[in-house]
Image 1 (cartoon, one colour):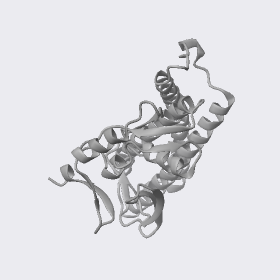
Image 2 (cartoon, rainbow, N blue to C red; image 1 turned 45 degrees about the horizontal axis):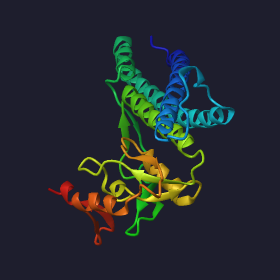
Image 3 (spheres, one colour; image 1 turned 30 degrees about the vertical axis):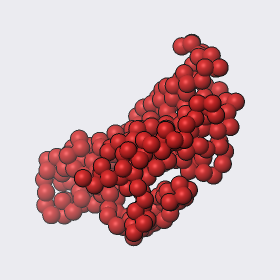
Length: 268
């Protein structure tokens, strides 16, 4: 006879082991990508000597920054894992009461861990913050009501979060290299049909490190799959007309009716 109480204990133990593995893997990825970003930033600064492989240690401030990032992403994993456990327990209880065999229950659990069964997180009706760029290229945060539940397998979610964490760490590493001796930076990157129009609208914009608009722009760079980058600002090399021409040629325009940036190449 299936014992739900024993199953609950073993499930909790399994997730504890999973979270330990996730912590170790995430810590390695964050450090690796932070160092890669820092090196990339250093390569764009001719006045800053590159560190050799044996000099790629982290400063105490950088270790603290990475510890905060690790805590942030582990918090997200913890929420997902908790939802996964609850969903598995509810489903298994339902199957047990319906007379499912132990083999059938085991198959369901195996399917969850192998990525064949999705975990659903229903936050419909709750608010989340999104970045918004207005007509004057000012960035702000707006609240949006969540209208659909989020659903993903354990494997897909872990992979997705790992990609986001790696991207975030890389950008943080670049920033630490670029910010040395520099007060300003330029938002640069591709202007094409793949890029989000409101990301493209910021290409060529100059920001000052430590200001609110710079903080928002940095958040834009850290969004999933964003290919734009922060580049050291040089008054001698900066050409505002060049950046504007790129955006004009790509068909970037402000849609007054929808109050949003759009690109004609995305509407074909």
